[in-house]
Length: 414
Ligand code: UTP
Image (cartoon, rainbow, N blue to C red; front, top):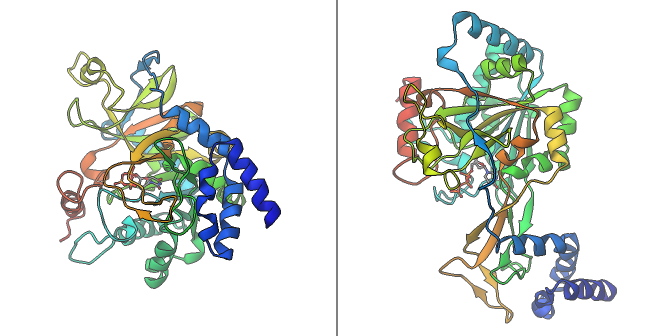
């Protein structure tokens, strides 16, 4: 241990992180051993790079942003609809399709005590979001005569509670050998002066690395391998917090197969020009999403000859990928975005500090930053009232109240 301590000390000094050892003597023997081991798993060069990146503005001004083609699901001719439906249905029936649900978020805006999927929507039948999603998949299994493998991405923080919730509810009647939970990755947070911090359990403070971390964590956890073994070629990756998410849509798969591209994304029309959503676009000729924080007023308000917005296809985090593309992306690094957050920590005297304002940086990657690695992407415009009922905020827009209403209207239930 003495040797390990010296090695860690040298490493930390080299990276200007030796403040981490100030609390070392106060720790139990077990915590000391874990602490040293944890430090050795951290890429300290990467942390320094990430911290340096917080000082630079990312400049998108030179990117060429253009509208992207899309297929409007509600405007297809009968013939087109059938062509896509047949193509998609065949692949689903042949067991080539899986669903991945991203449930690793912290759900801070909703403020529910527990993983977001355990939140009860307030329907007459007292269903949680996880039960609503399971029901939807079960209906599709019946329709296509298969059992769709379902992979649920959790985080270190919410994994045990999520797995326990499914166990306690007998997996809502889903065949449990078709459900796989896997944890997303984490990255250390750092203070405003670039220093790693310690949490109340004597661990280096880490936080989930964003939904873009899904590709790497699918590889690390053997999910890509499992898909390959099962003969799965297509994986729909969607959010946990949209109670109308249509996870098995043969039309989306059919359009992607017909266009011979590696991925597809669903969009809903932006409600008004300045709506705070990211929209699909072509960025430097590649598929991408331009965020509301980056788009110029001119582009967000631009219309075509029919008076329709030309950047109108909101990204709703419902995307379909070829498994080979997931595998390729998983080996590359996505850019990290930095968020300024409040982080409880232990100071150098062993006191636990609960900050009142943001005091640390968290680093996250976003799933749509992977789109430019694809050879192409088909966008399918769907109807908001049929497929998009997000549960984000405790009240107001995109809250349980609005999602409940959309759900009830769509399914005609109480
Ligand atoms: P959001 O970006 O809305 O984040 O996630 P969130 O964590 O759920 O909520 P807030 O921002 O803290 O209020 C969109 C989807 O991506 C998943 C979420 O679980 C949700 O399904 N997600 C997000 C992850 O799986 N991991 C992450 O690190 C972030």
